[in-house]
Image 1 (tube, rainbow, N blue to C red):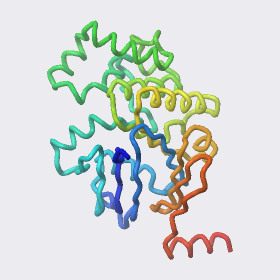
Image 2 (image 1 turned 60 degrees about the vertical axis):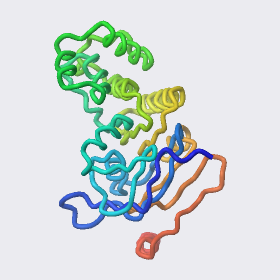
Image 3 (image 1 turned 180 degrees about the horizontal axis):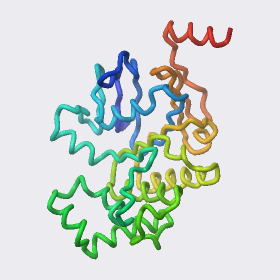
Length: 259
């Protein structure tokens, strides 16, 4: 059996300035190409966990390994290399709206470009670079938007540009943080269907945080549930759920809510 692409072991995360840990004793493995939905209410710790996986916030304790290498925010050089393998689709897409769509798409290539290369592309993009952006946009159904200003696109179109940007990065792992939170139900289904299909085509592993359990069940073979910073369930579609035992404090909180 191949080793997991991602291994998270007893992770505890307390962001700077936080009085208590946001994630506690989080452990799970992720295989290459596997698609997982991370579900739970607001404040469950989903965004903090994704930020820790990307090395954007340091762990208080525990360990994260990606493709056999430890994710360590203090090791700047190694972290830069690991981040090339991890694409992120944030909730608000993080497009630079005054720039052209191709500028935003090719931001996915910045990890493999020098600063001089990136500056030159901003003003004088080469035909090959525009071709790469065009190919990615065609895969998400926006082949006619190459030279449009990103700020002129609808919310659903901006989401597709964010997916195209992730494809250009050529990652091993894609982290999507509530990627459909701002979309209506029809566009949410379209975006998740597109994201999952393209990830499967390219063999990209996905962890996608969602509020909606129905969307998680429909589009992701595996669902991990978080509550109050802990993993409380791990379910694979068409399989019996694997329930993570709740800590005593969590059991008391649940009992209080049910009382």
